[in-house]
Image (cartoon, rainbow, N blue to C red; front, side, top):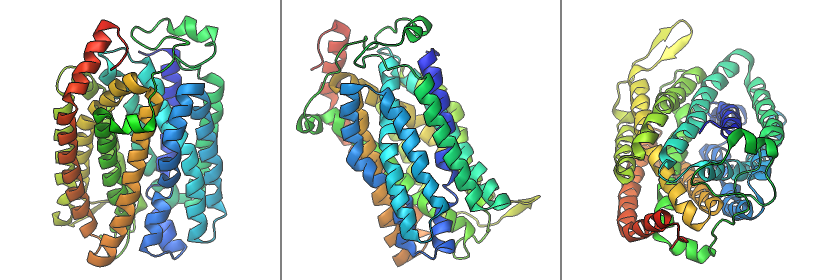
Length: 433
């Protein structure tokens, strides 16, 4: 598993995720308090990155299957970082939205192409182990970023945090371009050094092999693709609604009123880091037991955790300069554990489907689902806040995750015959059904 390409991509994603997540506790407050934006401005600015991801992720996925994954991974990091430099000169919330949209074009390449690359490395039967190990880089990076961003903002100001974001992402793009070999199965010759370092990967797509492709209509009619798209949309919904307004809920007077961006970063860090440390274990578990049961169980716990946030005791205490909300911290640890159960299993499902219909194509479509969910969660969440108050957004999050989980279960049951046929074809070495 720990070959040169896997290590390079793992480290690149870890550093980049620190940068991307660094502004999570900062952007909503920056738009609302510093630039005077309304609630809908907070939602649009936070979720603006998802609009181009919805449009471009499926397109980039197909292009990656045709022309190779590496250029899109490295180029995505560079574009995201350069676009984020605009936050330093933004004078109106509308400017922030524009730069977020441009950043989303880069993100449309980063995430689906990185997962497709890992999917090509994973041998059949070990998808869960590979995506679980790779997810550690994303989850720990995403957990470290908000905490770092909150500390930088409280100590040196929001501009220092934005500058750190730019440096991390541009630096990652350059390093990825220089160090990451072409993915197995990409057109053209692989670097000789990569072949020596990695050796043949059993079960992975061989160099020069064409990834199977289908038309968009065929993909969207394929029940396993529908299920994969749905579960990724659910994850997007939960993040879009909850994460968009968490910072306001914790910092502002109409929420907990702590005034601490560091606390927001700590909550997001605990959610990600606790789960991230367990991702490899749950990834291996996903190769040995029902992936459907793991995804459904994890999502149900996550739905319940979000729903009860308004009912938690609101007491806080201070440790030095750090404000702690113990009950809120505990529920975010629980949500992180639930997501650690579900995430590797659902990613392993994606890899299995992608092996049949095109790895980049499936990752692009599922990224579109994630972006659609994030955008819908943020915008509808803004309406919920306007009508019912800040606390109601967490009720909304819990309910939509519950409904989406039930829909995913139904779609997976409908897709059982397709999954059986896919596994039989893989064992026989035949073309996918």
